[in-house]
Length: 157
Image (cartoon, helix red, strand yellow):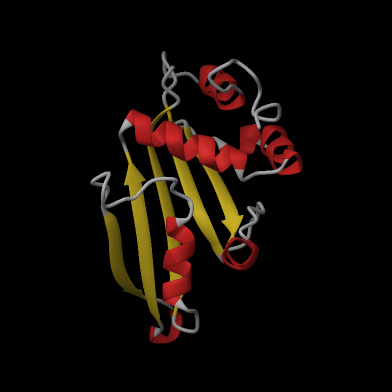
């Protein structure tokens, strides 16, 4: 069963942050080598308020096997409370295009390798384009709740 057409993970490194540690933490989301898997890590520079430099790291997955590995690794790194919180917030995390959004606290992942959901801007942004067919909100919501064995994401370990 296909869960997503694509996954995009983005992180911002602001002028006063250590971009090397942010990049290293971003790469820990992936249980495979980006280079060996021929996945591109995009690095761009932007200018924020008061002309402060921002480095943007972005990885997009489109191959089904890499998406499956990524999602499995993500769920294995989340505790039961985080999974339950996502289930309780499914409606608000899914937009009209059936893109599913999650943010993880940057500091807790960098320092402790703990995935903590957050609403703040200092985070890793995850966008999952759900593979709902037909393309309907109800189908996408049900898809977001299931794993390959039709267990909800809370049960999956």
